[in-house]
Image (cartoon, rainbow, N blue to C red; front, side, top):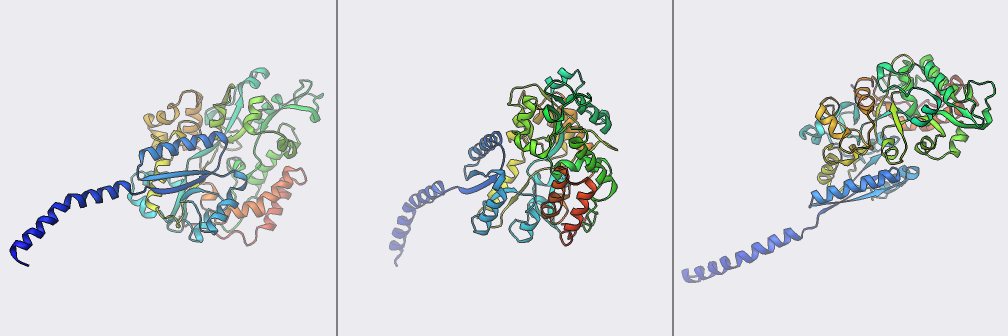
Length: 451
């Protein structure tokens, strides 16, 4: 090629360069965003709240499109397990308690350790909400949640009783709590449970209701000095005196004092929030997440700390949030993982569904205000004492779901069937837990990680 031909050829290439650049830019502009699927459970109020958060995330991340898939609680585990086994698992999801360690051991969940080590938001989440498998971080709670006491103010006013304490140092003793429950429990004739004419068969208002599952029993077991299992995860300790005593006193609320509904009565009633709203129950032991529903139901309610045995105690809990190893977009999934935990941008923290994941959100006044006061009318005045101080200073034990291997299976196969006998009045607490001990051999297999 002569010099003249070379110059002509190079000139032609230079003329084509702008076109090539435009083609490349156009290709980048037309590149499809990463598509993620996020699965979760929750009430109708929660479904709308999550939908709003995902819409906001999509608006702020042009390169990512998230499709939120709501699955009812009743068949969430089965549906998600089927999807994972079929190779159609979501990218990111709430992971059921019963499955977190099993799925992580099977290699279904990403090890997020490197992300946590290098990311300033993830690395400052509370250590007690980490889900770990040996040295791997397989997720955290999507939210911090705690167990507290809700009440209908009108029922208390009608009975002329003082509202439940909002400060742990003023919490009711168990004896005080039972006495108040008796005064709040009334029959069709208006007699309360202390009156000799009280008709057990015709109760119109119960003093208290509570979900009959381990999650809601844990604070009271811990308050009495009891434990679920030994620290090495090898022995079930629910049959020890402290735990049995707490369980027996919970059963006594139903069959001895008649201030809480029986399982059959509870099943015939609507949701706990609706029972509270309608005055069918005066108090409800429940999770923080109920605030989302209660704040939209239009009645005068409040919150307080739980009664105690030896010391005021609650727990920190929350659904696990994890990323599946089958995700084609793990980095983008982690962006959503982080965004869901951002108190400043995620409305779920301000609308009463979620509590923050970082210690400073409970210690820094400005950050506390950011989630408690961002949406007027959601949190009652006593929320500062009940949710902040109580959560940080009165959660002495990490819930076993975070550290006990096979915890979900232990609960499902040994503890829950035994407790069902207790709730049905077919066995006392000691007899029921002795039955659980018989069912558990082979289920307890140690800790998920070493401290």
